[in-house]
Length: 247
Image 1: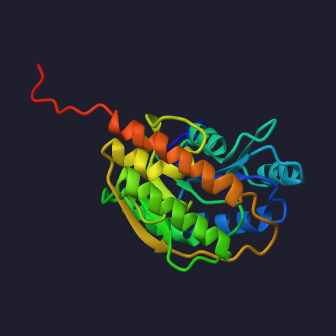
Image 2 (image 1 turned 180 degrees about the horizontal axis):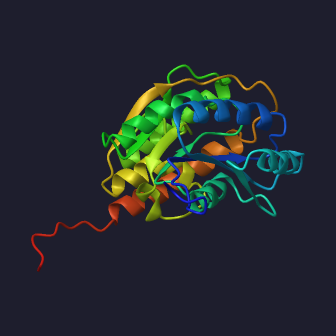
């Protein structure tokens, strides 16, 4: 029998970046808790407050006090979604990490199936794609252009790189380059390192409360510029195969 002082092995770490999402945190936390308690023996949820100016931090503090499975990091100022995710990855204890957005549009109920795909060894990274997107026309167009341009320049990996519903082995991101915007290219970065990808349709829900922090001006054009950088990185990546090594 394990001693009470022995550290419990965490099966899965959920990472959720949030920015001014005080209206969505508690309802999303209830959903996460319901799914995780049903599906996993040991789990944790790491919330990353990306410099919110509303009551987000206070709610995260309350959540962590009431349930230690929920932990949080709070940035002094806005660092961006990539920084928030990376900070969460760095805090994660489990060998398998899951991500969803903090706006309630991603469904936590999709995570267990993606987890089983990774845990079984079928893939190193299981990506969701939004078969029936519940976004306005401008966001759909932005995503369509971004995904199409990324595929054209860097090659096909997944059909919906903008979907945050994702589960992967932590090795997939440990050696990945860290840069602002990296969250848009996690599947491509994993594929460049030789990790196996898979994808499956996931539920996508309309935003019920709050408003999006992203728009055509601060998302699409920056994403297109980042793709050129990723194209250069892929072209200049080291490629070699070891023929043999000494014992």
